[in-house]
Length: 282
Image (cartoon, rainbow, N blue to C red; front, top):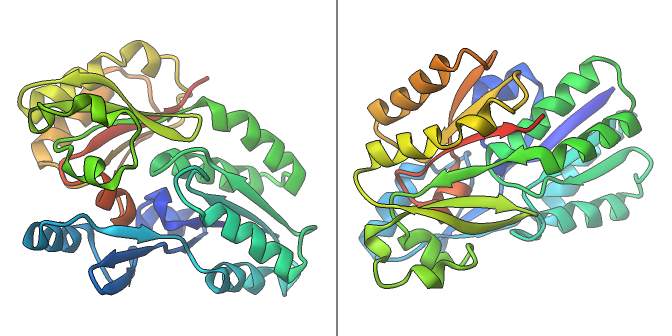
């Protein structure tokens, strides 16, 4: 049997995790002297409250080698094969930690570690594809080959309401160029080759900004694989999320429009009010 493990940055809802039988290993979130497990004993709204109260940006850290090894070992010990997904290796050491765990356990024949070169549901899209391939009876190597072809076609972008979190955290190259009007801008952030970078800059209220961002992607959306598209947000007003869903529905194109709330790690770096539309290009 082929099992699928992902770190918590995949940002899949509990329903999707259960539907596709995904094992999630949480990254760590550090608030001052306290450390938490993403999605286990802390929620994004708790992180925002702490950040506002302390005028500080949360820190995140990779899974430990013990946590990675335990997640893998529960399956390899019973003879199963495992595909592991992680956030882009350029954004976290989690991928390397899992590789070290595989070497320590000496289970290289049973386990494949995949660098998603992405974050949030950019990872989640690849995880779901893997679950579907596994259910179809594809072999471990066939799955890896298929996912390696999909990874460069994942399109992940989002618009942030506030630049404070990304700026303080230093996770987005090129943000220094936006200094000065930082609090007035709502940049589109794009993931390319496993790295986040600013793209177009918007001004105005987030409701109109988000709709502009999505509508400008229409040609790309209509060139996406039809199976599914994600609307992923870090705590947006319901009417904004609903307007994006309504627009995507108006295209009469996607078979499934999935809405998910970003987890603690992604929220820690992007801040509240962030929304992205993520899909796989044909």
